[in-house]
Amino acid sequence: MKYRIIERFRSKYNLKVMCDFFEVSRSGYYAWCKRQGRENRDTWLRDLICECQNETKQTYGCRRVRRWLMRKYGKNVNLKAVLRIMRKYDLLARVRRVRPYTHFDNAVHKYPNLLKRAFDQSVPNKF
Image (cartoon, rainbow, N blue to C red; front, side):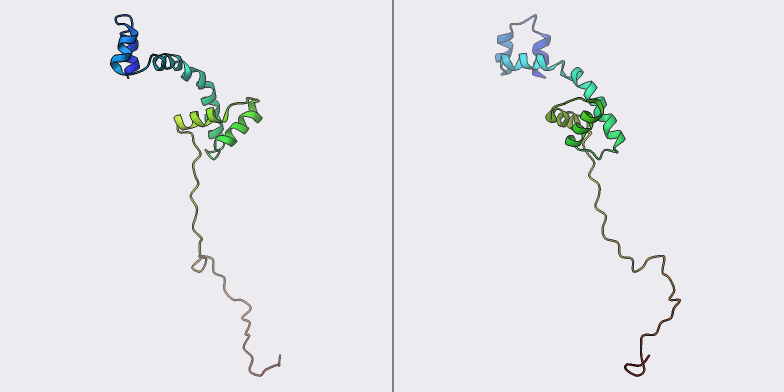
């Protein structure tokens, strides 16, 4: 916010005086000016990451997205750049929920005992 005000009134007031007033450094202001075009540089990468996440139902993290970009398009992209864009546009992998163990005691498909085998013997060692 401070840098935008400085940029707006730069032609009217001295840059050093405004930076001292807002308690920011001149190098910080110039770094902010340089960063302003960064979003345009990232649009192509954001589109590719969106395509990857749509194909994989957002199961890929930044490392797998980076490998996917390398395999499919031959683009060698920095891992931290991929992570930064995924965080910025909320494209991070969705963690799948862990399903609890299901007991099949009360299952719908209970089968009847057709053989009716009796394992109780009246006399030992006799068939």
